[in-house]
Image (cartoon, rainbow, N blue to C red; front, side):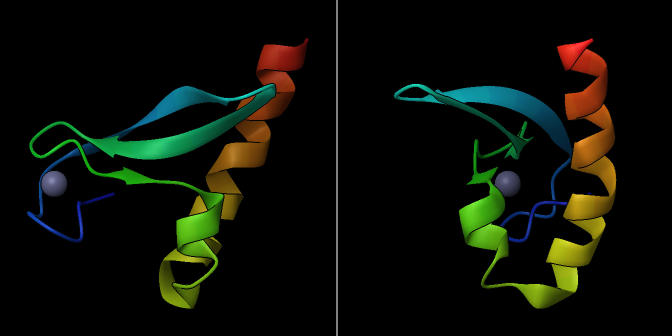
Length: 62
Ligand SMILES: [Zn+2]
């Protein structure tokens, strides 16, 4: 996963939005965060995102 802004390396991080925990991509270069809401508007990248995230959520819940 590369940052759409600076093409830097992105890693998956857990975020807390009020009481909702979600996972998103964060860029190590510019700090850009891509979450489900952002990706919902980017169909080309959303497919990649949702292939990866559900697996991680399942592991963390166990
Ligand atoms: Zn970036």
